[in-house]
Length: 200
Image (cartoon, rainbow, N blue to C red; front, side, top):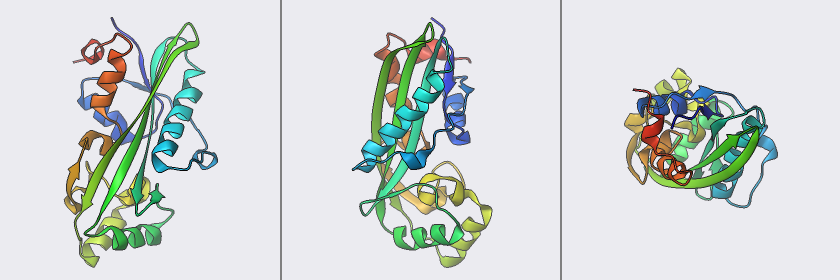
C-alpha cells in the first residue's frame, strides 16, 4: 500500500530526518499561531501544538497521512521554545551548561481519506538531554552562526550544537524533532508499516 505522506512543519531538520529514514513527505506549512496554545504541562503543550498543526493541514487534504510535530525543552520546570534573540540564547546556555533538561516532542498522525479525518493519533516522546559546559568563546561562536535562534531550547543534536551535548537518555531522533520509532508504531495502528512508505 502506498499513501501520500504530508509533513505539517517548516522544520528542515524534521524533513531531513524523514528523508534519511527513506520517506518522501510533501511539506505543507500549517501556519498555526503557537502563542495561542497554552497548557499546564510542557508535555501537554507539545501534544496540543502537534495536533493543531496536523488539524490545520489535514483540513486542506483529500487523501494523505499528515504528520504534525512540535518540540519544547523543559528546563527547571520552564518551557523553552526558540529564543527571542541572541541575548536570551546566551542566558539559556549560561543556565543549561553542565546540567540537563527534558526535550518533549509532540507528534500527531492524522489519517485523511475522502477529505475527512478518519483517525487522530497523538503521542509525546520525552528525552533527557545532558549538556556540556561550552566556554564563553564557544557560546559566542555558536550564537554567531544563528543556529540556536532557530530551534527549541537553543541547541541541536544534528547540527553545530551537537558538540555541546554530552549524552541523551531516550530517543535521539525525537530531539532532532520527530520520533521515528513512535511514527512506526503510529503507522502500525493504522495497519501500515513504515516500509510501505519507503521511497528508496
